[in-house]
Length: 188
Ligand code: PNS
Image (cartoon, rainbow, N blue to C red; front, side, top):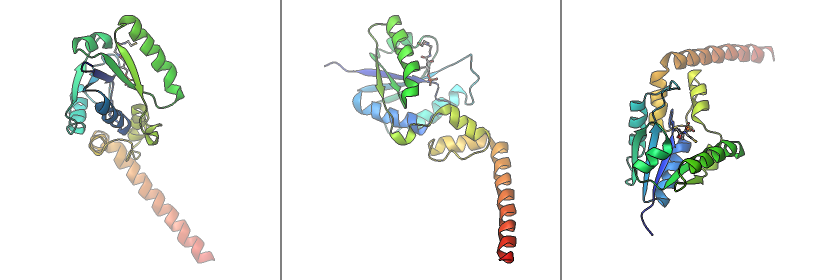
């Protein structure tokens, strides 16, 4: 059988543990896996393309058959230009299925020779999405365990005021509830 190269396209804004899990699974079954980051001009991403490239290169440095690249325009045309014969996409829950099916069938219409392969990330990441990670982090909430440590660090740097405010609020709440506890204890 000839070498199978796959493209794993996405926004990766930011890369999550679910993405990394899927990349590691994909790297085991495809001879070559290209992670293609969409250079999306419509959406304004939280992380620049350069930042996403750097994070994903760091996170996949241990996977010798994985390459990180950026693309723009039609995904099927980019896949063809890099000789990928498969597109890898992750399905976390039934809710992903409808959108992924629509996209896979549209891509098949555009390029019938390109196959879409779906894989499931580990169930512990089944609720993790870049959108929710951004939402939690923008309020300074904890994202430990949802994203790799380098991404967590980048989020903290980028959203420092939000994290500072959140941490201060937590400290105030803890002090306030500590006070109540003491008073309550004294009464009894
Ligand atoms: O991580 P995402 O945002 O779910 O990835 C979506 C992505 C990048 C795979 C999709 O939007 C895409 O392929 N965009 C490129 C433009 C394109 O080919 N559109 C037709 C899709 S049917």
